[in-house]
Length: 289
Picture (cartoon, one colour):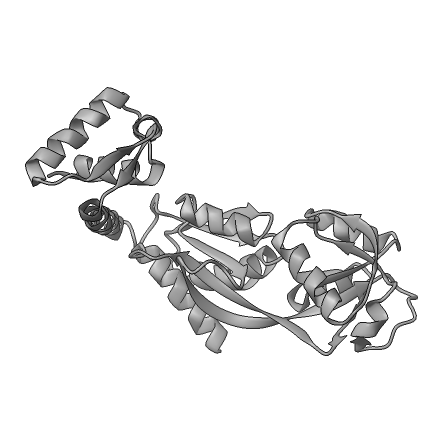
């Protein structure tokens, strides 16, 4: 067995069809099918079984796929070692929700870059928690920064608890903190209907029996802020974003009772590349400071 065969196995398991796997590997589908059959004969076991137009991983195959992923990760880590201390082409990909990206760029990345100047960090901006999860599952990102909860197939490393605050245009007659009951009839800009974050906010409104007036429904962060700046609505957002709002002349108030969300670094259940392990250590060190 060689590294090329390991890549074939992993790609087939991830894509579940020989055609899609071959496309991702830039080889012909018959060549991939032939390589998988040759490997199965070499190992004396069936790794994939036909299912409709695709394939499913067998019980023996699941173990082989797991070990193949670990082997490929280890090879990638070894290759990165030679460049790890200096200028290199090593890239760390981090998926982040738009709400949390400023905190990532403003606090975590400078600390990481100071210790690892040879690593480029590519931030993958995601519309929400679901998009972060998908970026990790699709292996477009090594790590993700999002609020919890996330599906149990991901590993979480909680960093901090961020308060949800009310951001309003100036001149609004509200106390600080704002009782939940005062959200009843308040004009709000909210995430799009059907999104995870919207469902969570709707559950909170139901818990406290309040019915805000929905002025805007969008997952675009700038749309929320523009509505608040124009005096059209208020916005429920993270305390970590309050400084940006205050600079824009908006008013930030706490809620009563307080609402907090756990922010975490998340990743797939597999061995992390060395550069990702280093970032995680930097993030956890910062959260403990």
